[in-house]
Each structure stands twice: as structure tokens, then as C-alpha cells.
Image (cartoon, rainbow, N blue to C red):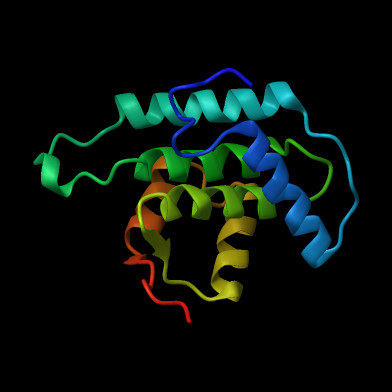
Length: 145
């Protein structure tokens, strides 16, 4: 894969691996990804990161947060696989946050309901996904032992 401007956060190979992990962990029908769908989701999320950055003091901007939210939004709504798109969307977003030492403080049930709301367009704007995530951001624990 060619190096893309978002590759320091995530790439198609990682997203596909996360999708496969979700299927193996929670079951589901295996299918090939619609690669143009994934490329489109990544490109659109990156454009949102670049052009939707809030004009605030640089110390308060979290690199990748907008990309993370829009990536979840686009993968969940575009359904790049026949099964497991929402899981891949959530896992991909959490991967991006982890690259920044962050995660979301939400139960599995809250995350599931949120992803369903996004996929079924009850949450209809990527911006609202970013806000939901931002409101629940926490630092990753440093000692997981």
C-alpha cells in the first residue's frame, strides 16, 4: 500500500485486520472489503480532519480526533463489508485514538447503541460522532498489568 497522509494513524491493511478480528471474536459472515469504499472513507475522514479543525489554541486540539470520528461515521454508514462494518468502524476509531494515548469511556452496550445509531443514521452527521467521542475521551491506562 502507498503511504497516505493518514497512515501514521491507520491504513487499509490495519482496518481489514481489525475487521477480521471482530469477526473471529464475535462471529459473522466473512466477506471481502469493498476497497474503494474503504479508500473513500479514509480520504473523506482525512479531509474532515484537515478542513474541519476548530480554530482554537493549538494546545487544545487533539490530533486525529476529527479523523477518528469521521472514519467511524463513514465506515459504519457506507457498510464496506456485508457483515461487521460497525465493529470495524468502532475498532478503527479506537485504534486511531490509541495512537494518541486515548480511548473512549463507554460501556460495550453504549458503544453498540452508538454504532447502531450511526449506521441507521439516527446520528446523521460526522460532526456529531466527533462530539460524542470527544465528550467521552480519557487517557489510556499506562499500566495494564
